Image (cartoon, rainbow, N blue to C red):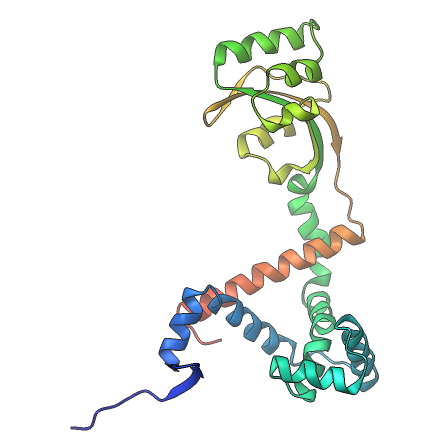
Length: 247
């Protein structure tokens, strides 16, 4: 009976890895998923066109970023990273081709996606104080709501979180980044409205909306949404690969 052995694919020092061992090691070092992400992305970029002039320009910019301006420095960089001149052209052009891929794939969807995500993208400035004791939170709420003490003064004196350093003032932050209960509360608030104590985990919090900053579909937001759509797609592709489906 023949004994089937796996062929070694990598040797590091005295350690010799088979393909299965290499995959396991990559997973243990949390490098397997980034590797799959890179492979999936590169496959998607194969059909993205670019001219030889663009590749030359991108390569020049890449070498400037790496501070490798002479042929000797560039060869040393290639040797250190185990790449050929042909491969480094792909490395240098990848960010540019990726942006073209995002635009070609999801550029027409950004406006509708923005409307879907707008409530999470709106930013707010709010004041918050927190304490472990409901009775204390209730007392502080009455002091603020009845005008006995300014919110900032109460927060500095009594809040038990890091927000005490800023007089309770937080933001601007996207609504979608907040605790779901806090996000829902502030999304229906009017500026200046103080809410009675609300329990969040082990804390009792008193909050007041200071300012609502509605999201605008500007260049920065458009880029953020394109990045988000790409990441959603990439996560799906990687999940399919890891579950054994062939792309």
